[in-house]
Length: 279
Ligand SMILES: [Zn+2]
Image 1: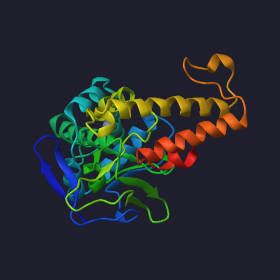
Image 2: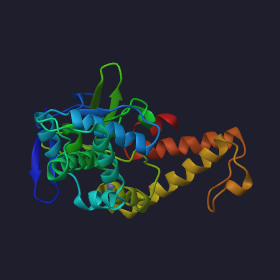
Image 3: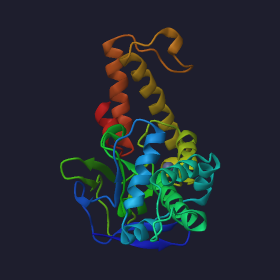
Image 4: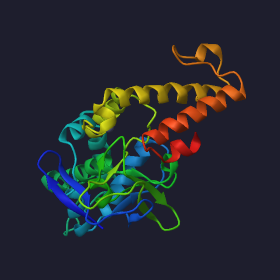
């Protein structure tokens, strides 16, 4: 149904080979590698070292082929946290040579560097499994090659029963069109806010319609205002919590009206997913 193509401007991308109608399951992908649910970054790195250390040669080669921004990797590396954790992991494991002597020096360094490299690729490309990473995180080679758009034509979701990441078409997609998903999952944001997130996490700039058309950006600003007003209404926020320019919703009627306007704005831009559902 889909194929990988190499684009000069952005590298790999996924395209539809045939016409795909709305609601079609494009893929149900098994993870290449997973990390169980965690409570802290430290714990995540430890589990990641464990997973990467056990990875087969075939899987590690697939992992090494995945795209990642060296700029983002540089930012993660700068803290030195990952390097320290991986060194610590191997010091704890006390790896030995074939003659039973403790592995150290260059030989240990090579193993450590390989694990650090694979951890970096994981950290840039992993997907949370379930809301808030309830089922952990994982790497999916096909999904990773799908590019981002703030007006996506596909939606991904972890299915814990199938233990697969499903990707469905949320609009009719013509043969030859590129498949897009939303990496951030927050439609009620201005293009500046969205692009800040995209820059920080993936070093990408989005050129979708919503990021290049001023009128569409104004609609997103209105969505942001309505979303925040509804969030404040929902949790009964006090006066102080109200940001400038955000209307205070005082009655159920006002809140319903705001929610209806927001739903219309979602539909006008052909946006769907959990945010529309919640609204
Ligand atoms: Zn965009």
